[in-house]
Length: 403
Ligand SMILES: Nc1ncnc2c1ncn2[C@@H]1O[C@H](COP(=O)(O)OP(=O)(O)OP(=O)(O)O)[C@@H](O)[C@H]1O
Ligand SMILES: [Mg+2]
Image (cartoon, helix red, strand yellow):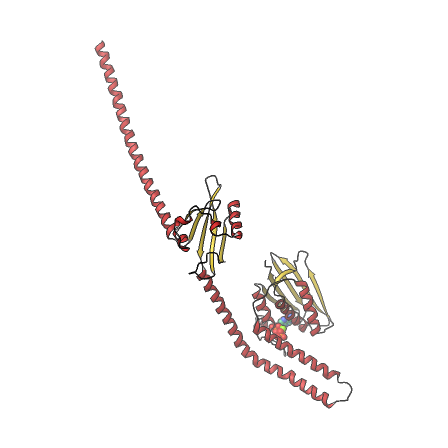
């Protein structure tokens, strides 16, 4: 019996040993598999790190990683090279001790506090100036917050891209555009010179005849009529010359904050003086939310009002002329509408009225509305015309409010 028991025990031990061996083998295989997997992942991470490192080091963008007190944690080669320093020079140093600037410090603090990135394009900098770089440089730059897993801000990334070449090229392009515009104007002016010579000859010969009559009738009583004719002809000639000069010399606007309603009143007074017509009533409709203060070039915009109102006055041949002026503010845009009940414009003419020298008037230069268009464009605004023959004309002017 004892022998049998021993034998049974031995067999059961053997079984358990075999089982354990099997489990051991399995565990070893699993361990090897896991080890392989870990090695694979490590390799992958290393490759990704290498890739990031290569991007970080080889990009032409200057990159600096700062902590929330704006001490440098890391900078890339481009950043360090820009000021001919080694990367280690920056690490641990405070940004604003190296580049003190109260304005930028405010912006940096704002980003670190609010977590909202700050992005600027083409900003003029004299900040990173060094002797070999041009005196003034332009930069696209941004400051992005870096957040940890709990979404707390634990640093900021500063990126800077030198866009001086791009901005300079843009500036050159603008200059060329301006020159083109100028040369178009000069060729238009050549055309105009002939027209002006013709137009001015007429009033001047009338003046000459009137003077001759005054001379002849010396001592004779009513010479008032003659004098009145002289005055009117001189004003006509003056208007022609004034339009010519404005068209030739339109410059970029000099923006000033003014009350547009005052400007409009001044313009109405002037036009009434040039054309003293009794039968014209002017109504103003100002909406409650109208903001009359706007940054514009008052000299230029007054010229626009003068030309538009003068056209309306000239078009009214009825017994009762009405000019309605509407003013409102919509989505940060000032909208002015000037509506007259004058002669209106033929459909076929409507598309031409903004072209220089287009006129249906015996004494017009045809520059009035071209000047308006040019000035309003320089203000980034809009001007359009709508008209029905024999009913009247509507001019719409839109001017954006600027800061
Ligand atoms: N309110 C209006 N009513 C009727 N016709 C108009 C009106 N505004 C413009 N026009 C038409 O458009 C043409 C061009 O106007 P624009 O102001 O450019 O030149 P002009 O008035 O003819 O000449 P200038 O302004 O030099 O005296 C006018 O000749 C006229 O036929
Ligand atoms: Mg006109």
